Structure formats: C-alpha cells, structure tokens
Image (cartoon, rainbow, N blue to C red; front, top):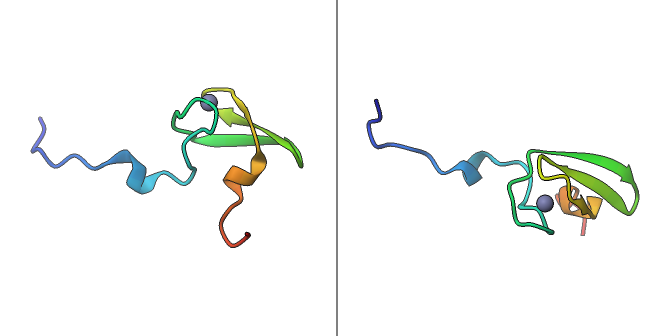
Length: 56
Ligand SMILES: [Zn+2]
C-alpha cells in the first residue's frame, strides 16, 4: 500500500519534543506562568517551551 514516500513527522509538529521525556508533544495545557501539562505524555513542563516563537 506504500509507495515508499513517507514523510518525517517532525516536519509538521508545531511543538518541540517534551523536555522531560523527549516524546512528541501534540498539545499542552497551561496551568500557570511556570507550569504546563504536555500531552499525551502528561509531563509537567515549562510553558516557555511552547511559547518560544517570537519571544526570547
Ligand atoms: Zn513528557
């Protein structure tokens, strides 16, 4: 069924890898200025990792 033209998943991933477990983060729930829950792994991470674009 495959023509051998698989695309790398990271090309369309809007979020960086989880800083805690390194897994692919597809969504994040921000709990506050210092904490967010990465999904689907469920790690507590800094929300800054999801808000790096345009802010240094
Ligand atoms: Zn994680």
